[in-house]
Image (tube, rainbow over all chains, first blue to last red; front, side, top):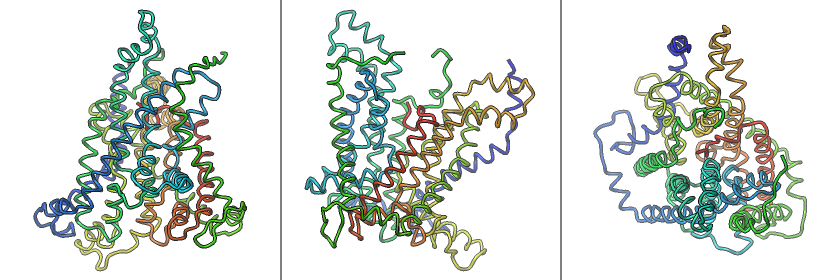
Length: 274
Length: 287
């Protein structure tokens, strides 16, 4: 077609590329700063003299921090497990059952993810206080289940919609009962969506503070603990733990990208009939 | 097309999600709504119903003023986020062929970088002994550290913009990718230059994505209370802080419930408008 003209049109836009590069610098410069500070023996960046692992060693001598780390992992894993059950059930419900007002129902389910965290935090705090539930791991976990469930539901229901019902019908025609159909046909087809959703939910849960901050008593997750550390200024230890979290999230999203197929290609316009 | 209603037996599938919805969303919201009609005297919550809290919100100009200030700041953040994210999405979608996947990933990776780490980074950059000040002093441009970087609305705006950029990028990019490429060829063949194509073809077709991105960043910015606490100083008290403080040192839960409910109404109204005018698919959750 007009590939020649397109090519020439592509050649221009130098200004745009410079602007884009500046935005990339804006996006990545802060992360580099955190990384550098975590290895710096002094507290400044100018006159950076040598590198040190001192702050990382200190992290491992902080029992409160280590406990908070395991708390976060525990909350994350439990939240993912619960959210996967409820979210998947919800996905099957909204894709397979027809009823009036379904759009409103879907929107309601998405609310905990879309609303500002402060609203979820304070409504749950008031709820638990009214029921005389003491702030504990349980309250934090419920907070995390509230926003991870819609996440799982969204991922799984979009996979189910894309699959269509024909495979299920075929299995039923061949004599499979609903349980067999689910186990041998549907589940293998949504497996990667489940893994991707689980990783996504874990990443979000691992990092969550806005809601957790409302629901935390003395049992703290890592972000809440770090937030406490930040009240006394930014110690080099804060940079060290930040760097560890940074690397951990990068590893998690790399896996996530593999399972959800979240890449530029999946966003490409599909053929008009598809 | 006639809407089909499933057999009653099918609705069993909805029980788990309905239980979840009631327990973690609907009932907590209802409790909050009820508590917003209580009042607080000292440390005791008085359970007689009253409109006191809402009356305070509408009569004491402090609340409206802070809400207005927060809305203004959130709007500024949304505009800045779009100014950063739209050209980026336009570039990745139309201008790059090789390494698109990598660029795309680079644009959304910041989405999954810890919220706290980003706050820590910006405090480090903007602080009195921070990166900018140390660099300027080392270059001999200034003798004393400049104090206007941190603890004001500027610091909040820059940090929240940083957080919002990927949230805007994804819906905008999705909308741009949906534009059939032959429309651009058609515009080209009819003699439109790049700028004209941008304004007459790409912007109108990408508008739903822009609206969605705008709303996402607006809601994120309006509801945040941790960034104003960390980077805003006394100048940067936002509506979120006002709500939060009722559950902290001010210890007036009924007032906090009322203010929270007002924020909820604002957020839901805006989200409702988005689902009407914005693109609902290809949100940041999209597969």
